[in-house]
Length: 285
Image (tube, rainbow, N blue to C red):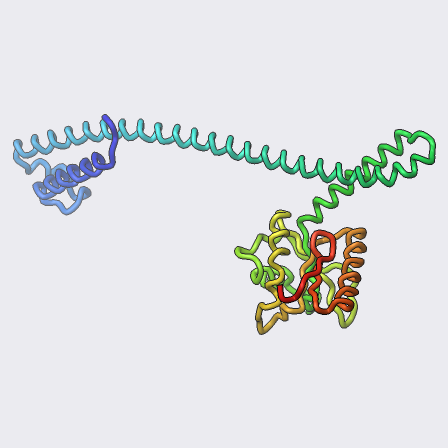
């Protein structure tokens, strides 16, 4: 027998009807009042029929229950198999992510090592054969640089956010700013003021997100803050930037100085920083 809900509903209906007839014959409102004295007052033929009907329904109940147990076991096994497949798929996805992260870190280490070895080679050219300690130090420095770069890739810096007090709710403030540029707003891992607090000035906010891709997306949409309106926040004065290393900040400052110089020398053109260089084009374009 194959279990179905229709069989269960039918069995319930038949049992309810039989019980109603027994209670009616015994002149009782419920099972609790259906005592032996009430049943003895019934005629023999109706009582035999009630017993026969109840026996048949009990047999059907056992059959349906057995089919239901087999169905439940089948569904349980199917659910277990589905869970196994999902766990396997999740593990494959995790392996893919691990491999991707490994490749990214390897690439970062390779780039850092190229930079370190380049400067090291110029020194080594005029000195004796490098020792194992020197080589180990160079590799370690490259690895540390790559790991630091990977960590910074999940951060962004907010400038121009007015510092209210030592008890300000940074998470709410950051969320309010991010919702003007990103939809949906990426989940925030943490936010904190950086630098030394000075009277009359507001320290930058370092915001950490869970994924570097979210940081890239937010920075790409940061220009929306220029036109955002609010009665509580002056978005036009807020500037978003990546979390740069000391060397990157120096290089960026030089690009900013070059951009300002070009703005003075060529006022008819617009000058922007993109991909590590200053690009100029006509304002009408």
